Length: 327
Image (cartoon, rainbow, N blue to C red; front, side, top):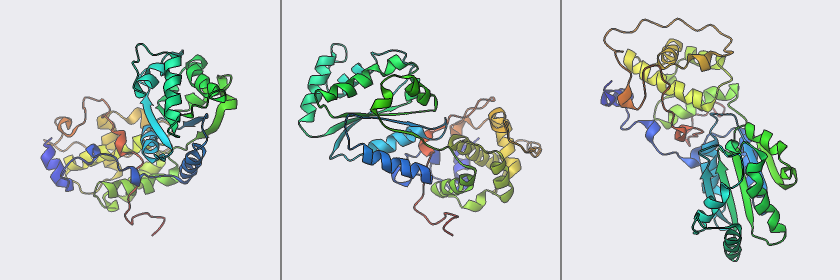
């Protein structure tokens, strides 16, 4: 597929999924707004542990970046780590903290880190450590360093908070870990994408990428509603794939049939159709000469493999006036 033609078809200069996230225009569900407000207020108390979980595909990494940029910089120094591998014991946190504090991770000890934290405390700021993908802390022993740093503040006030963000498995580890219950300042489950939020979120997302809400037809709306429960990531992938499919079909409106063809072509049907509860419309036959290869030039992989999803596009909220609930 010629990516220039694809961009011109929808009136874009660049692929919207490659644009950086607008953290001031996130799509918040009301329960998530309440959790965020409570978290920002609670973070003013040091020596605490905060745990937030949400189902996979619901923008936890986006939330972590939002939190990093919205914590009061006059009151906090903020470190943001993302776990790249499973941790089943202690020893993973100290090198990360040492590096953040300007120490040599290879030679630093608990004493060095505590001494540097004491120096930082003289500036009157709280060190808030945000850890994304914290569900990779598989065993209670992996939380030992966090709990030790919180506990030692009862003796020497180092003013350190930890915010752990992960999928629901994280809650299980927290409940299994002795000592966590007495250190928790907040344990909250952020809601997934509710059925009633599917169409509002879709309209906001279309507004963000410069397309009118009418690009997605009513039958496509009904089809998407029938697929609930769904994640933000699934809905984002479906929209992106349907826009490609509509271009290949030379259609300016996304129909239920367009969405289903995208689902089948990109190999998403197994995950999408589980407990869907409705019969899918039969796909139209491919238009001759227009679907010979996957649109790899547009940043997606073919051959039955799911496309790479950019989580930067999740939780967008426009400042425009297209919210159906306000109209």
